[in-house]
Length: 224
Image (tube, rainbow, N blue to C red; front, side):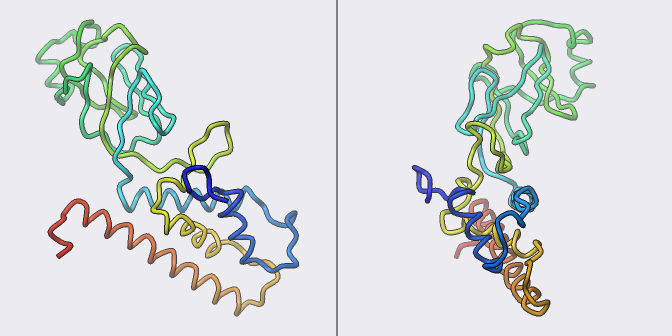
């Protein structure tokens, strides 16, 4: 059954739906749960890539609604993997402005070892660097606003429910990707082809719908 917020869950809703598409004489032991979960996480990755993720914010001094936080060490911030795109950066409520490393070198050649209150930031492969070390790695507050990834399905304690990030009427849609790419044990070849083709069609229609939803949010006049 759905969770307390009305969202579908893997064990109670999505996995039984997938299993229901398999022949009834296939035992639970014959199904590799890791393969199903792996395919589901591939589907989540496709949704992230084709929709640009969802709007969110992250801080280094507290968890957000999604259970992740920024890691700040001196002036270097490492993003958690659910950050897809950082759009604005704030320190203690004040927006920091982007500068390239070359520009920071011109402002202060010793910025990498400087301490104080940050005014600028630059990017690196796994996050951002502030123009000085604030001297407080966990007290922050460093905050980033941007686009986040729907989290992968995991079974660790307090792991976020990825289906909660999807519209309610589409929370089963990633299951169509799983079925469309999983072996349907015990079915005749023609039947397998037909079932998987239909599931792949429904999956592509779902992703296309999400993509168009992003367009409508960014460009409201297109609705008319």
